[in-house]
Image (cartoon, rainbow, N blue to C red; front, side, top):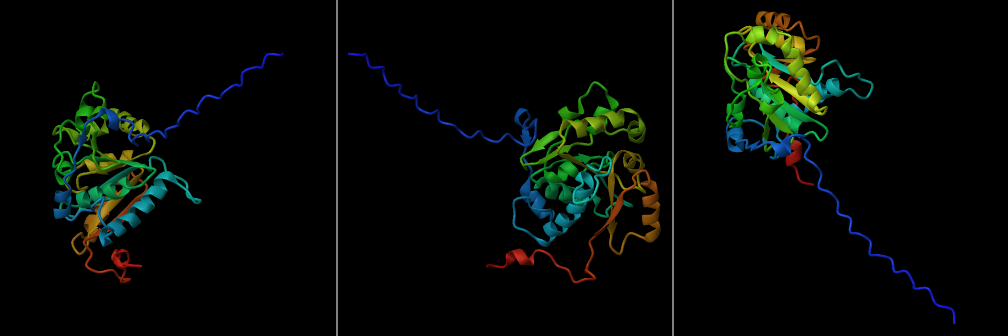
Amino acid sequence: AQPVAPTAVPAPAPVVQTPTPAPRSPTRGTKPVAKVDRERLLSLNFIDPYGSVTGLSEEFRIVKRQLLLAARGGKGVDAIPHGERILICSANPNEGKTFCAVNLALSMASEKDNRVLLVDADFAKPSVLARLGIEGGRGLMDALADPSIDVEDLVIETDIEGLSVLPAGAQTNQDTEYLAAARTAAVLDQLTSHDPTRIIIFDSPPALAASPASVLALHVGQAVMVVHADVTTENALRDALSLLSGCENIQLLLNRAKFSPTGRKFGNYYGYGA
């Protein structure tokens, strides 16, 4: 009788496990994550990044869409140079620039294809981290003053997915001179190249109150001038815009308007049931 060859029994198929998606931030896993004080955000009337849709959140959705289109391009629109760097400014203090900068950052952080770095560039009176309830430390000015400092090491990751912040850093009476130095371009290029999905929002000092805004305008692709309705004068606005002439793409954002000429109101739609 001929020997019968043994029948090969296939090995059990390996169990394939779907890997857990990596965090969108390339450094999030190696840095401590700061917890944003959400109760403080709500008490100061900021957007709740995980809350229900409101009229305010809808307004900033419209604002960010135009800025993101200019930053990334699409639908026949070319991306503008350094459009991923956005300067938020105002003519005078107390016109709402920080309020708009933080809300814009919170709104953009919800985007699936972008991350947001919110930079406190108001070196004399930094307030971004206080608004978020985060403790600060060394920041942008320290990196500009000391070439041995890696600016990326100073970026603070937050527990809001997609949002990180960079403190203003040490106060100095030479902030404009440091910004005007050649190192500034290298530091900002590093922040941009570190993460290609990153949108950088700078909360700058008021243009007519401090000189850093005019220098920062040379390094960004877009600027948003916050105008306090019924308060910011035309002359002040014109003077402030002239100081930001280093940026070729400037848009105006009307803040604290008491009415809309078109009667437009956002937010109510999402409150209706099916």
